Image (cartoon, one colour):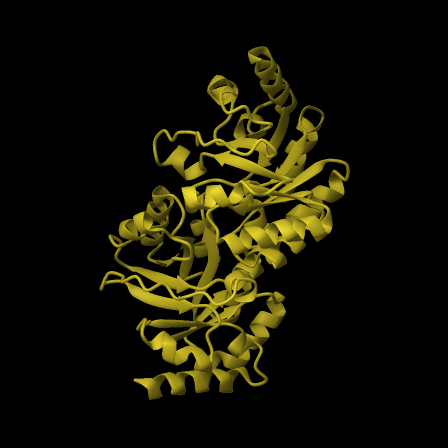
Length: 206
Length: 206
């Protein structure tokens, strides 16, 4: 299991400072959508510059203009970029093609993705699919459920949305390869310790 | 009919220079998603600073984190911000609430929005709904069709996607209040003249 530290609603400097603290206990570093939309591609460049050997996730949530957005992310140093599963099929195709051309990866965010697109998504190799309970669903919409849909065996699975020690047991059922954790690490007094405790608790559930 | 000039795949300086040329013949100025994702909220701030009296559209394509993203746009000077119709209903609700709180507006982009969400969207007043053929559908996916779904009478309708002189007759059937025009103006030798010709051709069709 990998831990992806999601950094959102922060300045670039704050995000880097938190990543530095947690570095040894996390696997992937995510530049959250809010950082990209607030500060632009600079947020990706500065994170990669500081962590050249970490796997960097650009949560750009592409819905259109896939070639331009994905090239921008990969040229800035991202190792994987995200596209919405709800986007038109052609956009998913272009994301996958662009990632292959760069030798990079695609994460497909399944938030609000309907059956028709889910079937389409099954065809892709070399993608990570992300089962996602959104911030708005967590903060404004009451308790949302994890997508229980099965995914192709050849795809890695990530899970995101309010993940912390308390939600690990429920998450275990999804059998994710990547746990995307935000505030449970980024807002902890000791981000390194928080990440280590999540990993330990996860392993104890195995 | 209003013309919204969409500025995409440009630097902020290039976008401002094109808007200056077309200024007198256009109504709304759109900071395209690519500018926001490449340069951040600075792209909105600089455009509003240069055009304090123009109606500024932030094409932020929100899919989550609606309060944060919409507040960011409005605080930067946007008069309207976009949300994807395909997003969770709660996200649409939060966009509408945030816009009301700021006395600003929401544009709901109907790209790949399914029936269930379209019905939900009918309830909103004070929104502009945008019938949208995406860049990827235009450039990679062959000829896409305009969404033919009817919208509530109290909502303004915008249309976007490869709009130029040649496509106006087909567009007329949608009866849009706002024509979103990108490269037909931004890539024209004389953007002002191009915008004026689109308006004249549109009026000639009435």
